[in-house]
Image (cartoon, rainbow over all chains, first blue to last red; front, side):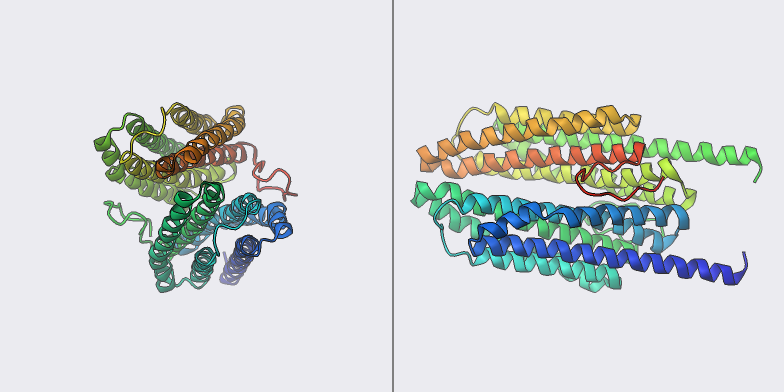
Length: 233
Length: 233
């Protein structure tokens, strides 16, 4: 194949890969917005806003399918190697993570809808804090993917402990409320569920960050204690 | 390339793909065993068995990395097309799902460890039933993958409602216990968590079944209401 044509193929591939990343960022933005909207609706006791989250997963589901299809096309037609191959496989995995984040926004809205049928258990301070942290982890993980930035990905992994300790703090506080007053048991359970959903959003950000580290360095950090075989370069 | 050499390449590829599937089945078996062991340890109030689940995730984590590496190698060296490409991408996704199932077995063991510090809340009948169902969904989904059996994959999707209604039944019953006696609040919370973990194992089986349907038919059933663009053939 002549060099010029080769260069065109490479240019075309890099352009398609760029578009794939752009769509993933759009998907990440949508997922983040939905988590934010769900927690805001809970804090502001805004039932119509809860309802909007429950029924608003069309765009994210459509993007999910579109991104998978783009990634498959790139794999099938371009036969990429090394970091490009790892980038496309990472895109497929990240796409799945983001779709689950969208599902978790729905789960938060479901728990919120039930919670709002009761008088408030307490002022909600730590749950929005958890949400902010989970959202910023998600944003950083996606930025790290687009910029191939291992250092940024590493900071996402470090945030997970903070999210975990916020979740434990929320749990202990709600348990106290439940022990004091049986009428608070049911609504407190829903707040505990919301905190678990937020924790899982952080887990998805962590997955993405691990995929970024593997993509860039071909180093698998997912089970650091395991005796890992060398990855494909 | 001469035909004989071509045939050799194809044979080699099919053999590698066969080995990949075999390793995935082994991973599925491990994941299922760990879920089973975790729930059995809870029901039998066997703390050493709980501990064994907590510390026993080495083999599954190692398989997780090995399978990813095999799939990458096949993608990089064989440049598969159509159903073979979809099968390898499905294997990568299924691998992630199975690893999460392994993590959920650990989560079940964590909740069980806390639960066993209290007197029993009730006889555990429905949780093992949920576990059996989730395990068989997982098994069927993997069989469907290996046999490329869309009908079997479809039955997995249908089981999810049953799992969901078992979970709701467990929740209502435990809520009653919590309202009756504050001392049962904390251990009941852990049983509720276990039921959520089992529900998520069912979700992973569902993901696998959806991947199988896409792999075989190139038909995306993940968001049936969404207006899906056509998939790559």
